[in-house]
Amino acid sequence: MDGLARYAGVIPEFDRFVEAIYRPLPVTARINALKTDRDRLLSRLKVAEVACRPFAWYPWGMRMGTDKPGNLVENLMGHIHIQEEISMVCAVVLDPRPGERVLDLCAAPGSKTTQIAMMMENRGLLVANDPANGRVASLRSNCERAGAINVAVTRYDGRRFPAQKFDRVLVDVPCTGQGMARKDPAVLGRWSLKRSLGIQRLQVALLKRGVEVVKPGGTVVYSTCTFAPEENEAVVSRVLDQVRGLSLQEVCVPDLQGSPGLSEVGGSAFGEEMKRCARYYPHQNDTGGFFVAKLVKE
Ligand SMILES: C[S@@+](CC[C@H](N)C(=O)[O-])C[C@H]1O[C@@H](n2cnc3c(N)ncnc32)[C@H](O)[C@@H]1O
Image (cartoon, rainbow, N blue to C red; front, top):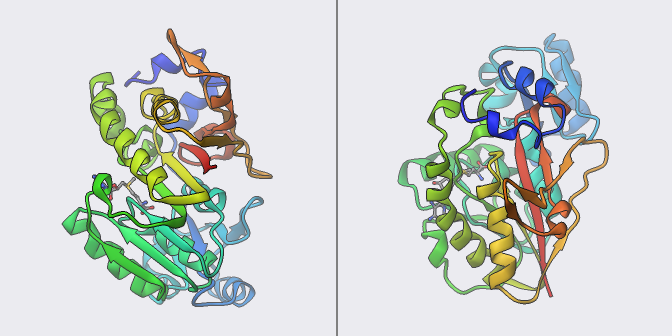
């Protein structure tokens, strides 16, 4: 079962999970308050006979009844950003405020960067970092289209991001992407334990740098779009072991169904506190899959 069989008995309602993961994803987008007014945008789409249904848990996100949202003039003008529903949860958990200094350590192509800029109302400083040349071009163009003018793009290897102090840091790391299977089923065939373990070292180093550059009292959100505990709880628990003065906070988004992080699996114990992390599975909200952890520096 393409690397999923190992989750039987781990993922709740496993049969429903498997059934959901082979269904195509609903088309979803985020309304961009930097460029448009929500009610006006929704009325315009209604006039254009594009069905839209805002999410119960997040008023800026919506399901759309069109196969080609990329062709909509609202997308070309940056009034909406096509974004998978569950990926919007990371910025919600990060909770950036206008006027703050925020770092998006692995930012390209910028779905979460543009969402964060919107939440910051374009005020303060948002550093969007990503070392990948080609992907940075999309990051820049997405920021421009979204009208995100408080963003500075940098191209550091996140493990060596220069010493700075931020109020909040998002560490949305590269991962094996099993949670994207509904968009690209080939990810399941590419998954192997060796690949998860191979990328873990980079994930740990990126999260460590994230917590180093956040101010005391600041928040770091770690996220992946994979189910593999090797890339999720194992990474967070290793960083908690290695860096003093961090606390793991409960991730709970009202009206969005999720499961607690895993305290142990397959002989590996990660600790009870890992239950404060959140796992979002495709069958719970009819979305992709995500893992989200929230750390606060004392
Ligand atoms: C999951 S994607 C980020 C998606 C992005 N946050 C968004 O919402 O559009 C992970 C990103 O990590 C970047 N990356 C890979 N190695 C990195 C490193 N050493 N430091 C920082 N970013 C890295 C990749 O180029 C990729 O763009």
